[in-house]
Amino acid sequence: MKLLTTILFFFLIAGGLWGLWYLQTSLPVLKTVEPFQMSSAVDGEKYDSENDRIKVVAFFYTACPDICPFTMSDLKEAYDELDDKGVFDGQVEFVSITLDPEADTEERVVNYANSFDAVTDHWHWLRGTEQETAAATEQFRMQRVKLDGQIVHSTTLYLVDADHQIRGTYQMATAKDRVNREELIGDVLRLVEK
Image (cartoon, rainbow, N blue to C red):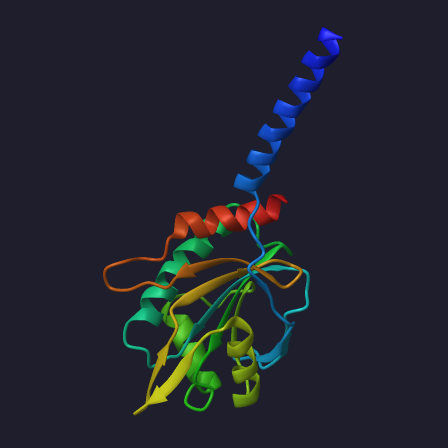
Protein backbone atom coordinates (compact mmCIF):
# COMPACT_ATOMS: atom_id res chain seq x y z
CA MET A 1 0.00 0.00 0.00
CA LYS A 2 2.87 2.35 0.87
CA LEU A 3 4.48 1.64 -2.53
CA LEU A 4 1.20 2.41 -4.32
CA THR A 5 0.88 5.71 -2.43
CA THR A 6 4.48 6.62 -3.33
CA ILE A 7 3.90 5.82 -7.01
CA LEU A 8 0.66 7.83 -7.04
CA PHE A 9 2.40 10.75 -5.33
CA PHE A 10 5.20 10.60 -7.92
CA PHE A 11 2.72 10.71 -10.81
CA LEU A 12 0.87 13.66 -9.26
CA ILE A 13 4.11 15.60 -8.88
CA ALA A 14 5.25 14.71 -12.39
CA GLY A 15 1.86 15.69 -13.81
CA GLY A 16 1.95 19.00 -11.96
CA LEU A 17 5.45 19.77 -13.20
CA TRP A 18 4.44 18.88 -16.76
CA GLY A 19 1.42 21.19 -16.46
CA LEU A 20 3.61 24.07 -15.29
CA TRP A 21 6.07 23.44 -18.12
CA TYR A 22 3.23 23.32 -20.67
CA LEU A 23 1.76 26.60 -19.43
CA GLN A 24 5.16 28.26 -19.66
CA THR A 25 5.93 26.95 -23.15
CA SER A 26 2.55 27.36 -24.84
CA LEU A 27 1.26 30.67 -26.12
CA PRO A 28 -2.25 31.76 -25.15
CA VAL A 29 -5.00 32.28 -27.72
CA LEU A 30 -5.76 36.00 -27.46
CA LYS A 31 -8.37 36.26 -30.22
CA THR A 32 -9.41 34.53 -33.43
CA VAL A 33 -9.52 36.59 -36.62
CA GLU A 34 -11.32 35.85 -39.85
CA PRO A 35 -9.27 34.97 -42.94
CA PHE A 36 -8.83 37.92 -45.29
CA GLN A 37 -7.85 38.64 -48.87
CA MET A 38 -6.05 41.68 -50.26
CA SER A 39 -3.93 42.59 -53.25
CA SER A 40 -0.18 42.22 -53.13
CA ALA A 41 1.40 45.58 -53.90
CA VAL A 42 4.48 43.76 -55.19
CA ASP A 43 2.97 41.58 -57.91
CA GLY A 44 -0.74 42.56 -58.00
CA GLU A 45 -1.77 38.98 -57.17
CA LYS A 46 -4.52 38.28 -54.66
CA TYR A 47 -3.17 37.31 -51.26
CA ASP A 48 -5.29 34.92 -49.18
CA SER A 49 -4.46 34.56 -45.47
CA GLU A 50 -6.07 31.12 -45.39
CA ASN A 51 -2.87 29.32 -46.28
CA ASP A 52 -1.87 27.26 -43.20
CA ARG A 53 1.06 29.53 -42.34
CA ILE A 54 2.10 31.31 -39.17
CA LYS A 55 2.05 35.06 -39.75
CA VAL A 56 3.77 38.08 -38.28
CA VAL A 57 1.27 40.85 -39.11
CA ALA A 58 2.19 44.54 -39.08
CA PHE A 59 0.21 47.59 -40.13
CA PHE A 60 1.99 50.64 -41.57
CA TYR A 61 1.65 53.57 -43.92
CA THR A 62 4.43 54.93 -46.09
CA ALA A 63 4.22 58.56 -44.89
CA CYS A 64 4.59 57.52 -41.24
CA PRO A 65 7.45 59.61 -39.86
CA ASP A 66 8.74 57.36 -37.10
CA ILE A 67 7.02 54.27 -35.68
CA CYS A 68 6.44 52.45 -38.98
CA PRO A 69 9.95 52.81 -40.45
CA PHE A 70 11.60 51.95 -37.12
CA THR A 71 9.36 48.88 -36.88
CA MET A 72 9.98 47.73 -40.46
CA SER A 73 13.72 48.03 -39.91
CA ASP A 74 13.46 45.85 -36.80
CA LEU A 75 11.20 43.37 -38.59
CA LYS A 76 13.76 43.06 -41.39
CA GLU A 77 16.34 42.02 -38.79
CA ALA A 78 13.88 39.54 -37.26
CA TYR A 79 13.08 38.22 -40.74
CA ASP A 80 16.78 37.66 -41.48
CA GLU A 81 17.29 35.81 -38.18
CA LEU A 82 14.28 33.58 -38.84
CA ASP A 83 15.40 33.03 -42.42
CA ASP A 84 18.73 31.75 -41.09
CA LYS A 85 16.72 29.18 -39.10
CA GLY A 86 14.91 28.01 -42.25
CA VAL A 87 11.34 28.62 -41.04
CA PHE A 88 10.02 30.33 -44.16
CA ASP A 89 9.78 27.18 -46.24
CA GLY A 90 5.98 26.88 -46.13
CA GLN A 91 5.70 27.53 -42.37
CA VAL A 92 6.01 31.25 -41.63
CA GLU A 93 5.44 34.53 -43.47
CA PHE A 94 5.46 38.24 -42.71
CA VAL A 95 2.42 40.30 -43.72
CA SER A 96 2.49 44.11 -43.81
CA ILE A 97 -0.78 45.93 -44.54
CA THR A 98 -1.00 49.61 -45.41
CA LEU A 99 -3.36 51.68 -43.28
CA ASP A 100 -3.66 54.27 -46.06
CA PRO A 101 -4.68 52.55 -49.30
CA GLU A 102 -5.81 55.86 -50.78
CA ALA A 103 -2.34 57.43 -50.66
CA ASP A 104 -0.22 54.28 -50.68
CA THR A 105 -0.23 53.26 -54.32
CA GLU A 106 1.33 49.96 -55.31
CA GLU A 107 4.43 51.83 -56.48
CA ARG A 108 4.77 53.67 -53.16
CA VAL A 109 4.40 50.47 -51.15
CA VAL A 110 6.98 48.64 -53.29
CA ASN A 111 9.44 51.54 -52.98
CA TYR A 112 8.85 51.57 -49.23
CA ALA A 113 9.47 47.82 -48.94
CA ASN A 114 12.58 48.15 -51.10
CA SER A 115 13.94 50.83 -48.78
CA PHE A 116 14.15 48.12 -46.09
CA ASP A 117 15.37 45.46 -48.53
CA ALA A 118 12.19 43.64 -47.56
CA VAL A 119 10.66 42.51 -50.84
CA THR A 120 10.96 38.76 -50.46
CA ASP A 121 9.01 35.64 -51.32
CA HIS A 122 7.79 35.30 -47.75
CA TRP A 123 7.05 38.93 -46.85
CA HIS A 124 3.76 40.12 -48.31
CA TRP A 125 3.15 43.85 -48.70
CA LEU A 126 -0.61 44.29 -49.00
CA ARG A 127 -2.84 47.09 -50.18
CA GLY A 128 -6.57 46.56 -49.85
CA THR A 129 -9.56 48.64 -50.70
CA GLU A 130 -10.74 51.02 -48.00
CA GLN A 131 -13.41 48.44 -47.07
CA GLU A 132 -10.90 45.58 -46.90
CA THR A 133 -8.54 47.72 -44.83
CA ALA A 134 -11.33 48.72 -42.43
CA ALA A 135 -12.36 45.08 -42.03
CA ALA A 136 -8.77 43.99 -41.31
CA THR A 137 -8.13 46.77 -38.80
CA GLU A 138 -11.40 45.96 -37.05
CA GLN A 139 -10.48 42.25 -36.85
CA PHE A 140 -7.10 43.06 -35.32
CA ARG A 141 -8.46 45.92 -33.20
CA MET A 142 -5.97 48.23 -34.88
CA GLN A 143 -7.16 51.78 -34.31
CA ARG A 144 -6.51 54.39 -37.01
CA VAL A 145 -7.64 57.96 -37.54
CA LYS A 146 -6.54 60.16 -40.44
CA LEU A 147 -5.83 63.77 -39.42
CA ASP A 148 -4.38 66.31 -41.86
CA GLY A 149 -2.79 63.63 -44.03
CA GLN A 150 -1.22 61.83 -41.06
CA ILE A 151 -2.59 58.63 -39.60
CA VAL A 152 -2.68 58.17 -35.86
CA HIS A 153 -2.73 54.44 -35.21
CA SER A 154 -2.27 51.73 -32.60
CA THR A 155 1.27 50.45 -32.16
CA THR A 156 0.83 46.69 -32.04
CA LEU A 157 2.35 43.81 -34.03
CA TYR A 158 0.57 40.47 -34.12
CA LEU A 159 1.64 36.84 -34.21
CA VAL A 160 -1.09 34.72 -35.82
CA ASP A 161 -1.03 30.93 -35.96
CA ALA A 162 -2.09 28.76 -38.90
CA ASP A 163 -5.64 28.59 -37.46
CA HIS A 164 -6.05 32.41 -37.51
CA GLN A 165 -5.60 32.73 -33.76
CA ILE A 166 -3.64 35.69 -32.42
CA ARG A 167 -1.00 34.10 -30.17
CA GLY A 168 1.12 37.14 -29.35
CA THR A 169 1.18 40.92 -29.52
CA TYR A 170 4.28 43.11 -29.47
CA GLN A 171 4.94 46.84 -29.31
CA MET A 172 6.06 48.51 -32.51
CA ALA A 173 9.36 50.39 -32.41
CA THR A 174 10.01 53.98 -31.41
CA ALA A 175 13.16 56.08 -31.54
CA LYS A 176 13.96 54.89 -28.01
CA ASP A 177 12.59 51.35 -27.90
CA ARG A 178 13.05 48.68 -30.54
CA VAL A 179 10.73 45.78 -31.28
CA ASN A 180 11.47 42.96 -28.84
CA ARG A 181 12.90 40.77 -31.60
CA GLU A 182 14.12 38.10 -29.19
CA GLU A 183 10.60 37.57 -27.82
CA LEU A 184 9.00 37.68 -31.27
CA ILE A 185 11.49 35.23 -32.78
CA GLY A 186 11.19 32.91 -29.77
CA ASP A 187 7.40 32.89 -30.02
CA VAL A 188 7.48 32.21 -33.77
CA LEU A 189 9.80 29.26 -33.17
CA ARG A 190 7.52 27.94 -30.40
CA LEU A 191 4.60 27.88 -32.84
CA VAL A 192 6.75 26.25 -35.55
CA GLU A 193 7.81 23.50 -33.14
CA LYS A 194 4.28 22.94 -31.82
